[in-house]
Image: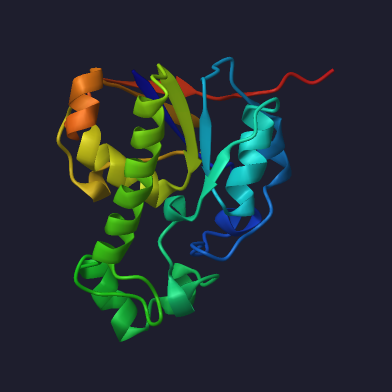
Length: 199
């Protein structure tokens, strides 16, 4: 049973290293050249446009199920701000030193974010198992992928130790019963994304 995780393409806000959670931003032109030879039986996506657009680019003949639970963390008042904008802010420095117990003003506490993502994961797994599917793809955000890898990858690593790049995905390969029981996958492999050839 294969569950693939793909991060949305690089956005204009990503280019300037701004915090981008529930706000949205158009994809950078180069992101529209991404492609993959992989295909899956069913697709799920965050309901934010940058993920929907990425799904259309990578899997153009498939319409994903949209889940609000798969959104990035809500950064509240820090949405659209950069490190340079915030580095003198005491609350921001506290959050950087311990993001699990600190929270952006009007943003989403870490435990609420992880509970929401887990809820989205459970919906995906329920659908996949009930339809007896062998594969699915999830188009989502960096924070969501980090949480899912920290929870389900075979190698136990902390949330912050995982990298979720824009130009690669991950395939988590599960035994069906282990997936049903919420256990870790047996194999994790990277899926490189390539730029479409021009001409």
